[in-house]
Image (tube, rainbow, N blue to C red; front, top):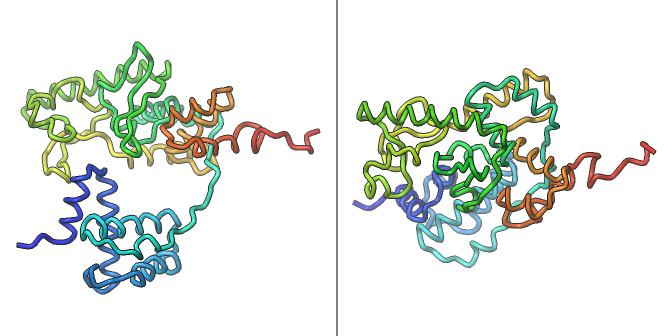
Length: 318
């Protein structure tokens, strides 16, 4: 039986070890592209069809430039790597211009107020986002082996761009993380004793090391409350907490604190970088801690340091 197009798309994405989020996004946009053109096969469509779909997203659906570009990336991947069609017009499709936005930064009083509302384990997760500059999923994917309490550092595995990096571990996070690790290891022992679950391991490590799923080093620091089925492998095991639960907790805490800024999980990472810059940290150091490939990405924080744009003082203040 011939392999279905979307199943082949999933297989190629997994062969390239793309994240599950990327797989979901690419399959979603490929499906919408095909449905938009009345279920015609992509091999029967050309440049005009791609541009018509992108125009529909921008004009009719009013999506953001980043969403429009994500859809384009999915379609290009479909043609180049799944259908293996090299068409000259693929590189000629115009990408939407990204809007440059100033990041939302919380002041230290606002952050302390939010910490006062959050409860475990969400306060510990937010502590890592603000104290170490982690993205929410980077914090949730941390395993016991990634924390070095002696050196006061942690390792982010397979971060954005599939890169590893080392960043700082705040002193105030240590006690809470030790307690969280104890809870995680207790859950793993219970799963092992009951003959169920076991942490989900990357690649084929579960076959190479059958007992590693219960070893302390591989346990997620923030394990999920229930056993779940991995959508890619079909295996049942203990995953980490979902990012949606952290996002909901952060938004609820911001509302209780009457903070009018748009508070998201990423705002704590922005605040980490901005407050480091204000304290005199070198921009290159901040770039490494954040895992930015280009220092120009990190330079956005120079626009939101204390005292307004680039730290300038308004002439109205004398």
